[in-house]
Image (tube, rainbow, N blue to C red):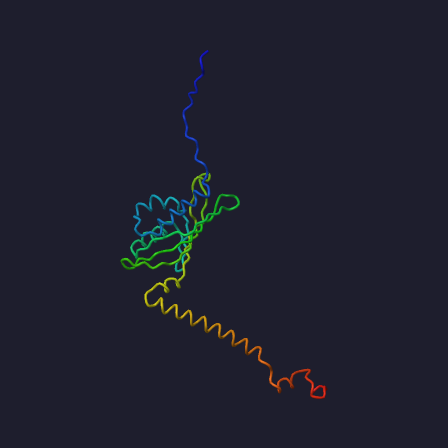
Length: 209
């Protein structure tokens, strides 16, 4: 008896949905590409632009823009300014309850390389809000927020940084001294005249004054 041969065409199994580890790896890669001015534009077009939603919103300490075209223009314009790159310290990704969207948070240090062999570190926190697409096989970033402190920049600038530290120390002691002085004044015992004139006060014979 002849054996029946399966002649169905061979098909590759479908790729699994993106897991948290996959998302963390991709957002780490995206952050390093976005915040490294040595990355060429062709690499951004290939590895970053496909993950941008048409209405992506960027929020920073000094500006806020919306739209993928504006986002790409700002991204390319940053390549013409001071050099910088990013070192990622921590990264976490959380998915919303329906598991069709989520948020990635990146904690890192941005190194501004204004002069040769001289880098100024500045802590930066990046948040990405994204929607999962293609049945969870990919995602699109809908919001990108950049958080950093001006104090970190001032602290790392030569000469100004030292003065800024001295100013903060003096300001801290002045504030503490003002608090202690206000407490001392609030707890100062009343003078005999004020105690005698106070409501309910009594004289030496125990009678109301």
